[in-house]
Structures are given as C-alpha cells and as structure tokens.
Length: 557
Image 1 (tube, rainbow, N blue to C red):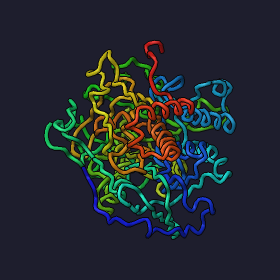
Image 2 (cartoon, helix red, strand yellow):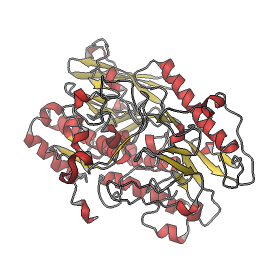
Image 3 (cartoon, one colour):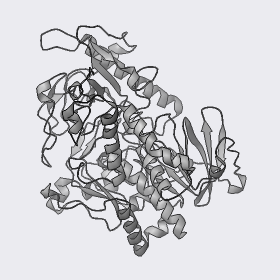
Image 4 (cartoon, helix red, strand yellow):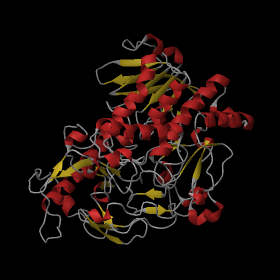
C-alpha cells in the first residue's frame, strides 16, 4: 500500500479564480481528470444526467488509446452483438459512419455493416486516430453547447486538497499559464496512470504482487515488485511506397537496439522472429503477406488465434482495397519489437520518466530504420526503403504517437479486488468467471501481459467472459474520488484483461453515473456499496442507460 505524503489543507483555503471558464462551471459538480476513453465516457454520462462537468485533458485530442496513443480497439469476438455498453457501441458506429460519410469507399465497403477501415486482423475496427478524435469531439459538442460540459485541453490537475476523507479542492494548470482552483463535489481519475491517487493520498498499488498476497497461480513466487510493470510502447504509422527511398537518418542509439538480445527472446529484438505469447515458442513473422490478411480472429476460447504472424496487417488502419480512389495502406506499428520494458514511467521522478520515454522513442525509430535498411526480404535482399513514416497521422513533431501506450499504472486499494482465480479459464473452467452481485458491467479479453520492467516475459492466459464488480470502483476510504480508467481494483495479473478499450469505457461511464447516484442520494460510494438495496437500484439505472450486467450463454454465438 502506498500513501505518498501531502499536507492536509482545509477547503477554506481553496479559491476559484477560473477567470476564463464559463460562470456556471467555476465549481463543477464533477471534475474528470484525463481525456482518454474512460474520461470521455464519464463526461458523456455525466452530461446525459445533467451534471455540470469539467473534463481536463493533457492533450488537444481526446480519446487516449484510440487517438494520442494510436491503438486500434482491442476487443472480444462478440463485440458487434453484445459485451459493451450502448454508448460504446454508439462510438464504434459513429466512427464507421464517419468513413462512410467522408471517404471514397467502394460500394462493397460502404454496405458492410462491420466496416473495418484497416482490415486489421487484431481489431474489428482499426482506424485512424484523427477519425476517432473527430467523432469524439462531435459526440461531446451538444453537451458543451448546452453549458453542462466544459473541456480544458492541454491542462492537468496538479494538486488536490483533502479534508479528512473528502477531496475539498483541486488545482489545474494550463499550458497557457492559467492556474485554476476549483471545489468540485466529485473527482474522477481517468488518467492513464492513475496520477490523481498520490495527489489525493488514496491507497494504491503498482506493479506485480506476490503470490502470498493474492494467491494467484501466476503471481510472483517471492516478494512483490512495485516497479515490475508491463512494457509501454511508442506507436508510429507507416505506408509503403515501393521503389522510393524514405529512409530516415540513422537514429542515435541504433547500434544498441540492433544488438539487443533479451534473455527470453528468440533472437535480436529488432527482427521478424518473435515469441508467441500463447505457446512461448519462437514464431516466424513476415512483414507483408496478403494471403494472411484475415487470420482466424474467431478462434474458439482456449485456442491460439495465430497461424503465423503478419506484421503489416496486424494493426493496419487503412486498407487500400476499401477505397474507390487512390489510398495507401497505412499500418500502425505497435509490435512486440517496439515494446519498451527497460524501465517504468510510473512512480519515478520526472527525469527518469522522461529518460525512459526518450529511450522508447529511440527504440521505435530504430525499428523503423532497421525495417528500411536491414530487414530480410523474401527475394534475398535487405531493407524496405519505401517504408515512409506517416507523421501526419499524429501531427507530432517527431512523427511518433503523442503519448506512450501505457498498459499499466496505479490501481486503487478497492473494496473488491479481482484476482486471476476469479476469471482464468484453467481455474474456473466450465463454471465460468466469478459472478458478482454488484456487477456494473461486463467484459472479455485474455489475460494479456506483455514483458515487464522486472525482466519477466509474457503471461498470456485464456479467461472466461467476466463481470466488473462495483466494489472494484470503490476506494477503501476517500469518499468523493472514483477511478475511471485502468486504475480500478485489479491485480497486476488481472489488469491484463481489464485494461482494454470496452472495459475502460464501461468503467468511466459507470464512475460518472455512480457519482451522480451518490450526489442524489447523499451517500458516499462506500455506504452505497454496503447497502444491497441501493446497489440493486443503481443496477436498474445502469440497465436503463444501456449497460449490460451479465453475460448470456455465449455458446450460442
């Protein structure tokens, strides 16, 4: 447990200059920190129920994983029919509608109800970051016009005042120099790493727990390692112009990355051979192979969905075959070869975090340079100089993703913690995942842990379709702060299944509705969660909002 020290300051010390905010949001009812999927879902839900809300985002683009991090949706195979909230499905359909409205699609692609712009084999809706950013802005626009929602971009919450068990005030610092001090009634932490938790002195955990603590079969056999967290990745986008030369300058540090051979890896990290997370056997990859574009996405539970590995179509975001006018293939590079596991950016000093981000960028650029200059080709040659960095996809100065794809950060000490033995298929089997009487949503994904900063290789486990317990969103003590992203009560192991797009959205949406319910009933989340009747009434509200609470018999799908 971690409780970083910060002085307690009474709410009497909080002022509200907020000189550029509309008058009615000087003291918003809900302050949402973080503009990722959880934050956006929370903002939409809060506005839907009439709460004055302030959404604070570090970046100009909203959407987090989908936009600034460049990660196409990682979802389960039933996503088109069930297993997500109604508002998440609306987001997905709005993205498809954006392509149908504005892009020169072929007739076949336009008619496809499950249009996948990139035809990626790891995602059913692989698309450009800017498309999601545009759609999200459109979804929020009516609520901003009504005055219920204010969005502050290029800003962050830098201080929280705590008066006993309540957050009594917040300071926001904007890139333009403004400093705003507000007194929200509820605070939602939708940041990518749970960065409000230490500010609020909320008990949390990071990294890998020990087996003695959690009883999980795949937890560490030894002491906990708080700094052992999953790799993060700096994404970038490519197109291929055969016959042209777009080779970048040799990156500083390239020799180091070219020669780097992790102990658990079947060769140099910069290579086409990699490790299959499901079998832990070497896997021969290929850069291009049209014949393998659609790889067995619908493999049965418990069986590998890989029959080879084609990197180009893995997270491709534009497939030229969908378009009636010239359009290049564009592929998002978030591959095992640019996962960075040599250091964490959570609970370290700013200089250390910046150094690891800089090194992760060097790794990504070194991978690009290796592909352009040294990657083996089927014709016996080396290098694909026609690979062109598509910096315009992110609009960043270096052509890379605006922020790292962070798989793991701080997790609250919650009233309920989800353990591996609650959802792992090899433990639960035909009984299915643990059923929670306080379910506030459902999800499904493998326990998919990438190599960790502690030197551990993949942990990849089949899971049963699972529920999200309300208790995992309720801190043990603080009364008006809720997690709204990947920072709920999971473990290092189960975070690997609960960290994906649909679950993060579900968590953010429920956090806002829970805050609203607490304000209306004048109850704390802890008191509400302890009252079975209140929980049942809240669940009825969630169902009316289009949130699924339990799985049907999925063997019918």
